[in-house]
Picture (cartoon, rainbow, N blue to C red):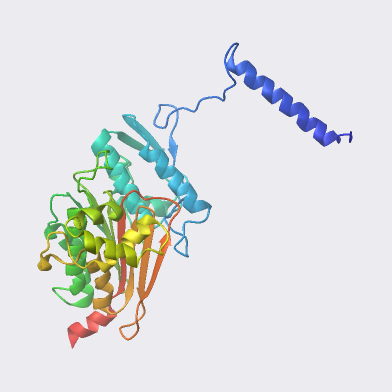
Length: 363
């Protein structure tokens, strides 16, 4: 038998001593066990937020430590069932807009449905403090932020939210006023397209579904972040509904032939949520059958085509779809991705340069 080195012997002694400690801790007659972890939200433990709030990596995949840590944090947040919760935001250094919006939606859901009283340890980062105040997340955290937002990458963000029963355009007019200021157009085509997309979200996202037995938020039930900066418009919409994969079959309940045809077209795509997103892009009507109500998910996609250039992306549960169009004269590029982590809802996002339409408005 080969003689063990001194390092190996030390490791074996440590291992034996560790096993004995575990056995003594378990008590006589009891099976070996590990110490129990306190539940999140207990008096002695805070839920620690990650340093980075980020949904997707630069390649639109969910790889990397920052992404994994963010979703681990969301999983713990969704599991909270206590009446009080302390969130330690002290280490948060960066909040990407869609991840911040999803965080806000989850906080709102927790307050609405479980009555959880949330408090927070303030972030050390002054930029993070400004983001929380500008987006209204500070109010959900019951966090008093003394610093007034003044950073260029923060002060242009606008917020809106509303109930699932209806989408009042008046709720969106303040955040869309920036578009009119930049383009000089009192009624911008992008404005109507995004309103219809949010209306479609409110109409389809919270339908009754036999697989959905958990409670869903009522008011607010959709959330919007919007920014116009350097003549570029960014809009992100979020809901915590049943997802496209469950909503699309309900929409096409009376058109089973069409449903089968759509799913056949996307059969080679990986992931049921991603296949549902692609099928929804092909389907050109809302469930109401009223043409003037828009064209569902395809209407959100058409905002880019009608504008001539920009980026649109949709994330629903574990599905992701990205559409990029560089100019009016070239075809757009489509990409679909099966994600590792579910967002348990749907996010739609647009990024549009406003120069092109601005020129048309002055001609």
